[in-house]
Length: 152
Length: 305
Image (tube, rainbow over all chains, first blue to last red; front, side):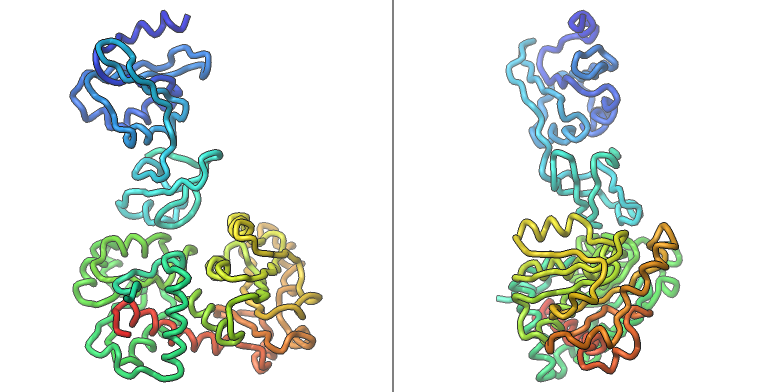
């Protein structure tokens, strides 16, 4: 059943397919990767049927291969996402995402008294624990945990 | 080679144990033998976006006793900040006028941010509930001076251990030594787990208590902090515990000879005034030590020693 649904998102010749994105974080992923600013052909689908998530999202970007560093940024919001590298309509590589050790400008600091919530300062965190997810703010040194994680 | 040259001091974690030792040694040298006009011709900016008379006067005294000049403001109301200037603009401007900036700000992480945009070094004199590293260094200095060592001591921390910034930083700094900790606080204000994890990782011993009258005889240092009524969700809880964490002379009767009582000040009612005359009370000397330690920090960063 899932396969017929996926056909509604057309295949690409060369580029990247990001699959298994939780449907409710698809737009965060688009945002984090800055897809709104590129002129390549992009197709995305959301609320597609998925055995794993119930509803999932998918993004297909023609002609772009992301660096590992870039793509790992989305691991915070879509840790189970899978990355497929497409060349000539074939999947030539598959990657699982890994949460990076440091992240910049993606997550909002949970501490209302933090400088990043008062002046235009790019947020920076060190990942102190991946499971459960705990981020330590480079500025106020407070911990933002999974429950209080907000994507900018 | 002076590794502290041009280095900002934002958090106690910024200085290695060796750099901390070097500051303490320099402070001891300055106390014994005042170094004269070491800061002559230097301009230090003291930007107190949030008032803190005690810390500001300590820094001013430290700079002026070494013949340095100090510029700045004591509260944000008397600066361009009240006109809406950003922290970034204030720091960039003032860095043109000074060799080093001491700043205190209620916003957490403000000093770290300032250190990233300022061409001159920043000393954090307190950023909200986050860090106040010069306080930690003067606490270490006071402990070392009174005990002769930082190693193998039994440190009692009393009062508000949940929100107390000074006890958290001191714990981190002392975790580099073979320290035994005793945490004495009401249940609502216990030492947070993240600090206990640090001690667990380093294999250091710590014990938690509700009261300390029975165990104070083991202490080398008692570090008192204030238990504030506002911290309690239930005012009845505060009423129940408020007198447990007040230090009185009779409690010091059977304590060790080398025991010293520290307090970051200002004190409200957690140490009875009668204790002030007790030879084991050390909090006012502790404040004086802050001047030597701040002199050592400033001159080390400016590479003048």
